[in-house]
Length: 95
Image: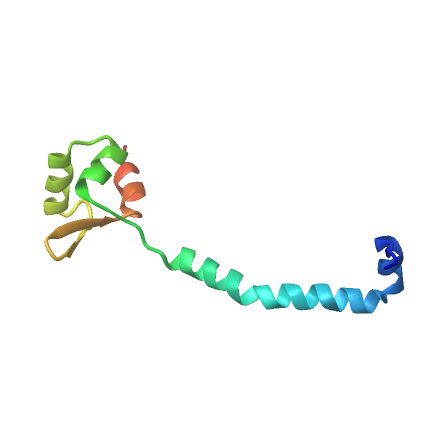
């Protein structure tokens, strides 16, 4: 079997055909890329009071007191107390 030079093969393909193949490949990947992006942007991260304390360099007792006083927003998931990641910026801003 005769070897085909890739350069000659590319030149033989019409430019429009080659462009269409690339466009179709990119279009076929858009849904998976969008799904990954949507999943990442919709992912809300929560921290336990212990994790929040480590990040903000505060004792866990201080964090729990601030939650009780309303200075840090938190939600309960069963018995677990969870603090949204956006609270870190709010909590550290006054400092």
